[in-house]
Image 1 (cartoon, one colour):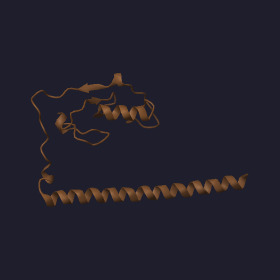
Image 2 (cartoon, one colour):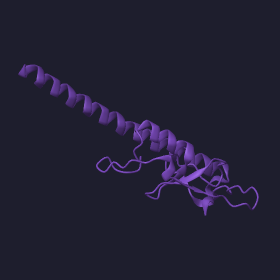
Image 3 (tube, helix red, strand yellow):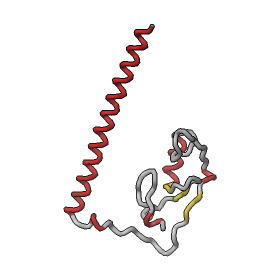
Image 4 (cartoon, helix red, strand yellow):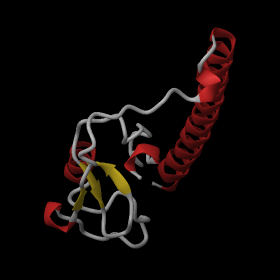
Length: 127
């Protein structure tokens, strides 16, 4: 059901959104507005396909999922988010994950800068 799905672009639960939900030909489910934005950014190529096999994707290839007509339904809160200590623990875990990702990103940036600097010096020495 849509209630248990999440957008593969934003990670947002699809059961709580009022926006249009679509499926790509490759089987990925996401919010239509976000997918169209992503398509505009990368020149109409499927954002879920690898860079080796770039496939064009257009709006008419998307399949819209219909929501149930059984009244307005909201997703119940996750069991681990029902008390303040568990909510604080979840926030701490998310913060830790973000800090670790930032560290890895900064390290990769520094490595890339070092490689670029070395390549520029080698190119300058060859001229």
